[in-house]
Image (tube, each protein chain N blue to C red):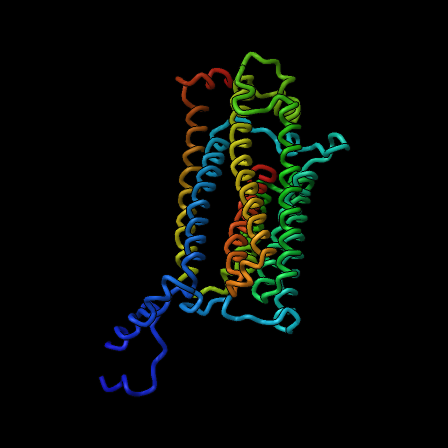
Length: 146
Length: 245
């Protein structure tokens, strides 16, 4: 218990100065550009670049040709899955979220998952309005389409 | 409290004395700013989706976006694929700049930041061309609001079958909504790219002047890098919502 108290006095000045001593994040691991570790990292970056490019090309092929032949719901689900895959690679590797501690990942990712409900609720609402417009005799569109 | 005298246990994440997230204050704040910015962009895209879901007809992206500079029309999705590729590559050069920063490699940071800035400017130029092109076809904020317009004004935006069967009211309403959302969302994204390019130029000047070398670390490159990757991330979603779905 008391060990925390003595720590606090020692680190107080660090909050106003060089913060890099408070954490041991990526910055603390300086390494040489020509080291094997550095080369492996660069190789990983280029590998992810290749994956992102392949996904984009697949999406464009889907958007250009495939949508004539496969059901709309199927191609749209494929687009959404590929989009989420692409964004996961960008966040995990390019933004280094994969290298952060568990607590920090949760702080960023949990609020975003709440959006799933937001999206479903609003799209459903839009769809309801469309069916209301099409099926309600009081609406102008009803007489147009009949 | 006899155990305090034995070998010290690993400190608890929230026990005090260290950052529980193991991240500096500046980086945490950049992440939380980006989280709030993601909410803004998501709200835009969700309202676009809601409007699209309640519309009887909707412009077809393969018709709206089928032109390429100097080649004319008939190249659906090609130009926007090029834009997407430019932005992904500039994200790659940014992550290489961050990596060079980890290695305290000043020359590497300068080189990769320059490439990132070139990529950002190339993307903005492409967007300027696309906006100009669509504007020449009559599209802008609030355009196509007149329901008495003949159907030919929508020729560029719909498949012939949809154009044939849709009512003038539906064509006018959906085209008007589509372009309001298109210019607002790609404009808001373009404003982010513009400020990202400005931040990149600022940190490039600081790197050349040796500011980060004297500071002992290149964390500022990481923070601006996070912002730049986020801009790329948003484009991934804009690309899907406007050009693919």
